[in-house]
Length: 96
Image 1 (cartoon, helix red, strand yellow):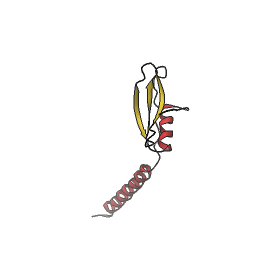
Image 2 (cartoon, rainbow, N blue to C red):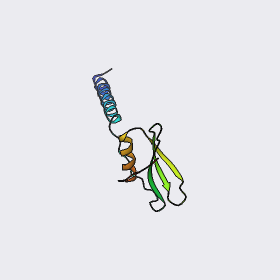
Image 3 (cartoon, rainbow, N blue to C red):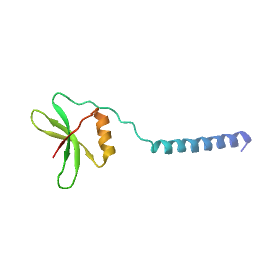
Image 4 (tube, rainbow, N blue to C red):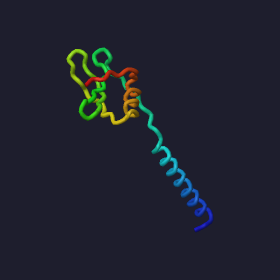
């Protein structure tokens, strides 16, 4: 093995280790929330809350038929904020 091949292999190892460090760092970053739109004329955002166990489900309720569509199970306040950001919601009505 000549000197050029040794240098090339060393460069490739360094590059691979740097790439893996960048991937690890990106893996733990907070992911950007993509904003999604919904039919604001027919659906309103609702947070369904259970009286018994405190379980919360965020979704949309049809204002004409009363049908509820679950969107996400809410375990903590950060998930609730993520839901609000995703759909551009400022006010979220609770329903028991």
